[in-house]
Image (cartoon, rainbow, N blue to C red):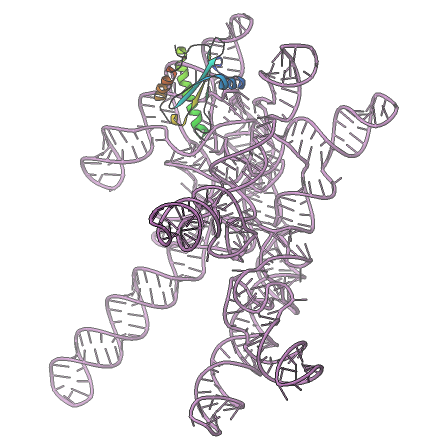
Length: 113
RNA sequence: UAGGAGUGUCGGGUGAUUGCGUUAUUGGAAACAAUACCGAGGAAAGUCCGAACACCUCUUGUACUGCAAAGCACAAGAACAAAGAAAGUCGUUAACGACGACCGAGUAUAAGAAUCAGUAAUCGAGGAAUUGGUUUACUUAUUCCUCAAUUACUGAAUCAAAGCCUAGGGAAAGUGCCACAGAGACUAUACUAACCAACACCUAGUGUUGGUAAAACGUGAAAAGUGAUGUGAGGUACCUGUCAUUUAUGAACAGAUGCUACACAUCUCGCUCUAUGGUGACAUAGAUGCGUGGCAAACCCUUUCUGGUGUAAGAGCAAAUUUGGUAGCUCGCAUGAGCUUAAUGGCAACAUUAAGCCUAGAUAGAUAAUCACCUCCUUCUUGUUUACAAGGAGAAGACAAAAUUCGGCUUACAGACACGUCCUAGAAC
RNA sequence: GCCUCGGUAGCUCAAUGGAUAGAGCAGGAGUGUUCUAAACUCAAGGUUGGGGGUUCGACUCCUCCCCGGGGCA
């Protein structure tokens, strides 16, 4: 799990991010981001029921994505709100392979240093 | 010992690095930092029932305020109706549609039992054919057929265990339904045609009423009120014989067989009553009398029960913006119908007592990510005693994640283990 | 967290507890036409979402699962 200051918590913020954020989508993951005028970046992960009906599989995917974020947290540019979407294709994959895919998508954005 | 049935428990472990949440301690004004402890399940799931807890509504009573209307606090309770639920008995429980024990109804197989059929073998009796012998009608051998018995195997239906299943009040309060078929599906014998009689019209037919026979076979899931057997009377179908003559028919008689809305007797089923046993549902026995179609998971009737809403309940603090309230934050929220062990009571569900223990609390939602080793497991190869040993490869791999909390139910589930409880068969003592 | 509706042929829908589960469209074969279409004829296509029960008999009644839609706060 991420530290509390790196979590995006309020529903209001997420709704505005959905409405105004920029989106980038890869094979097994999607990202939306926007500026938030804070010192730190804030992250959240969304995996809907359409990805899988089993809570076990959804929770595992969320944890894997969070682990990748935590590993690379020093490489992010501060001052952004970011949402990650899980997709069906990313279920039941190794964490190493998932990390490759996520970094590939992140290279398309301006989030990495 | 073998087979079957049943019940219960568990559902990886150790370590390393990097991280998250609650709590505690220390440092700090605070933000925060460091250390330590703890951190998903048997179903956390489905949301099918029930309860705790909270607030609200209404009724009644009491106290206080008020001239009064009324307000407010506390306590007790949820009338009638509507709507819904439950009901075999006794118990357990906070409560339940849950659980336990029992009662009644239903149900099916194993081992086994006796019965029947078929096949094979053996032995016996009888018959036929062939061959040999001679007293020419006896005997020997072989083959075949029939009958009976025994053994083995196979098959059939019957009986048959522990079990399994049960949403089990009332059909003699009433209503409704029971397709097709059938005379008739609950005022049962209809309707049509045929024959006979009476009456009317009127004339050789028509109508009405009554009777006869068809006709209790069959139909159907179910048939008139328990079913079976026997005896008798009558009826009827068919067969045989007698008789008669038109010699292929019946107007009559006798006999056998079958069926039968009749009577009687015996047994059986159910109801009622009595006795005995049981807390009870009921069971057993006896008696005299009686004989009621099925469906209430159709409407309904009887007895009993339920006020409503749900933790997003609700309580508090409180920006922008003064009161109130909104955003937001805190509490509710983890000591509980709690867990473990022991003793006692009880067939059991469970209860009581004693000792010990504290065991998740998140909120875009923590309990993890990455590895190493171990054991369990899967598969292959080699050696050999059917099983074990050695080596190689794969490798925790099932169902599945708290969201106010409990008690149940239901559904999903890789694999492992225990109990020796119950039943059947065999062996030994 | 709670409430509610639905599932029938490839698609859209019917059905009083009574048996062969029906209609339209689509698809198939034929007639038709010089050819295509229209029109006409014919047949095929169903585990009535799944399991269990009540009943003589279940798409229908009861119950447990599965799937899908809608609503409340």
